[in-house]
Length: 264
Image 1 (cartoon, one colour):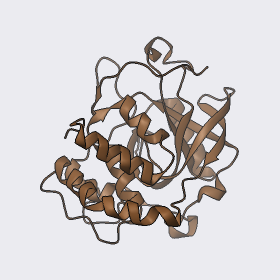
Image 2 (cartoon, one colour; image 1 turned 120 degrees about the vertical axis):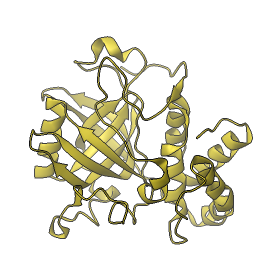
Image 3 (spheres, rainbow, N blue to C red; image 1 turned 90 degrees about the vertical axis):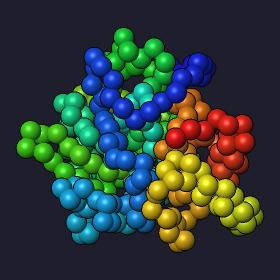
């Protein structure tokens, strides 16, 4: 069941009592320039040493592409943490059903879809509360399995998708999905590049002391990384994900900056 989006509140990447957060991104925003770059994802001096990239033989660096998205994928519903197609997301997985999800994904194509829970999910959290139909599929690019069965993983976004239907026969949720590719058209490259100086100012807004962003970082990765990590309500973040592509998302970010709606 998918209803209308409503309400709004600020969202920060923190755990909240009494129910512990199902994942975390407990890395200082000073690492943003690394975390947002699909080509600079964790094999860097900033990487937590225990979280290692998967072996090259398993395709960890190239990984699945948009064309490889299977028709059914596991989905990981969260209330305030999202993944964008050209960004990366560190996650800590400790609920038994989601530990099983990660284990199964590692045995297969390593793809997991992230979706956002709808307001009022708390009463149904242990079941299958309603979700927004738009999400992002990511591939597990880095993994650390802890002795007690928990996981630290890094998901690298590969494509946006729409949930067509759900299969609730497993402990975790599965969904039939339709990929929503967002290729940057030839007529979009120059307008997107013209946004880059202002987008870099947004990066400085998040952390004035951040490591300089590499020049070779694609514009789409810069846009999606900012959309994923800048301070805003989760509803604004969902609106950004719903945008038709990188240029539309960049236009929306610039407009939000002009209205003073972005924070550190």
